[in-house]
Length: 192
Image 1 (cartoon, rainbow, N blue to C red):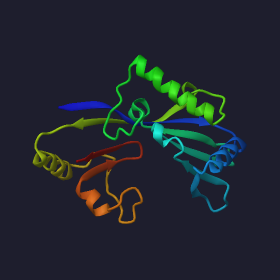
Image 2 (image 1 turned 90 degrees about the vertical axis):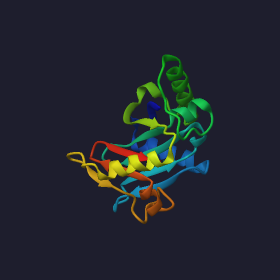
Image 3 (image 1 turned 120 degrees about the vertical axis):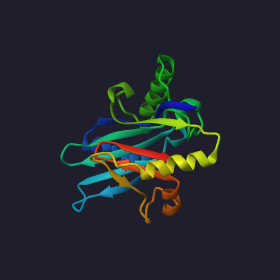
């Protein structure tokens, strides 16, 4: 059986450098903001906040002197809609649940004292996914083996977790249980 939907998507809205600074200070006052990237001149910075993680929303703040400053919401819609962590649930949009999701996101934007709605934000990323449920664990391993033996898609490369990767606890184990091909614009991942 296969379930198809959207696991995660990102929304972006352009802000002024000073507006981003105000958000950084607001989130730091609440204890939920840290710098994750900075250039040598300290003029371009990226901040991360998990302040709304219980709603399935992670915040990225981009502060650039060249005018590309803004806010990004990485949204796990099923977590937002269900009110609890929903790691494997996939979002299938309907008018009703879309409206409920935008209402939730608009409340979060309002709490950050921002004067725009989620509909004003542009979609900058989407992770469409397919959950394939198999009865036999050996079949899952066989599918991963087939993916690993398959030809790499043109303009893609095989991507694996580095030993010092911060996104997984054990890179070797993660690589044994997943397979990924990526290009500049898309990533295909299979995992058990």
